[in-house]
Each structure stands twice: as structure tokens, then as C-alpha cells.
Length: 220
Image 1 (cartoon, one colour):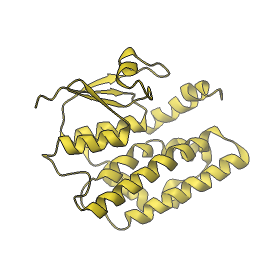
Image 2 (tube, rainbow, N blue to C red):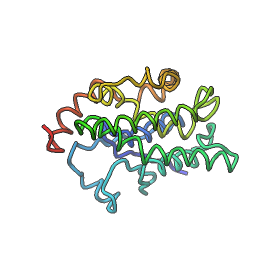
Image 3 (cartoon, rainbow, N blue to C red):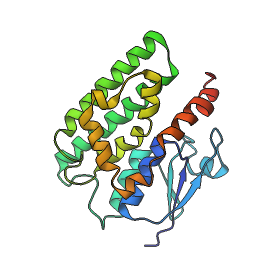
């Protein structure tokens, strides 16, 4: 099979980072096509006409959309390296459950910690910490959510950790104080090249959120 691979990407998007980490983990060479913030290129509109969102993986001219679906696709197509998803059907279903939980919870409540004020901000902060503690409980004593190796849930959650500094600074709390084992997991994962070379810098994320994103949201 010919492997012409490209990724329609935006550097700060945690959803796009998922794809970057998965591609790096599998050792896939690809062309990175960076989108401009608040702008949709003709290629993006052509390749994802339904949602018109990044990321989009283009493999041999065919698009794959939605970040978790992209990660699953990468895992199945480039199966020469250890799988991100468990082979056991129950464990695989459980991994998909937690990835879906992350998708539905972390970004929304995390964003509210820096876009809301007063009681609404406090409620979002409380909810976010409860979510992170649930995830910390699921991690348990394992080095990775996937067990001894990086797995699907790790890839689903890791990109949001680059936003923790923004959540903490604006929400006035510490993830490390509330969820120390989860932060140990973050540090452990950052020792992997496929993670560290694809995670955006937390301070750069904070500046981006406080300027470009707040302006777009009408908050600046």
C-alpha cells in the first residue's frame, strides 16, 4: 500500500495533537498542513465538508475526520507497532468509554475555567477537578492508562494537559495539589518523544488563549 499521509492541523488544538502523537507513536511520516486560526482553508472545506473542523488525516487522498476516529484509524492501519487499543474486547470497550468521557467533559469544563467568572467559574473548576480525579482513579497505580505502554486513553487525554497551566492560572487552583498521581503520569508521558515533541508549550498556549481566543470569543 502506498502511504501518502498528511494532516490538516492547528498547533494549539488538543484534538489535532491526538493525531500527531498517534502518528509519531507509530512512526508514520506525514506532511503537516497547518491551518490559520479562525480561518478555514479550501483544503479543509473540501476534506471535511460536514464539520469543517480540524484535524483531518488524509491517507492516499482519502480523508478521515474526528480526532478519536483518526487515532483508531492510525492504530488499525499501521499495526506493525504495538496497538494503542487493547486486543481484549472488554478492555477495548472500556478504553473507548474513557476516551468518550474525556471528549465530552474535559475541554468544555476546562474552557469555562478561563472564560467564565464568579459562581459559574467556580462550578466549572469544581466539575473539572472531579473529572480529573475520576480519571486519576481509573489510572490507579499503572504507569499509563494503557497499562505498561502508551494507550488509546493516554492519547485521548494527554493533549489537554498542555492547557492545564491556563486552567490553573485563570481558575486559581493546582492540578498537582488535587491530583498528584495524574501529574506524575503527565511527567512520565513527557519522557516519550512521541509526546514531548508534539505537545505545544503551556506558556504559549496560555498567551494564545488570553489573546487570540478571548478576542474571538468577545472576551477581550
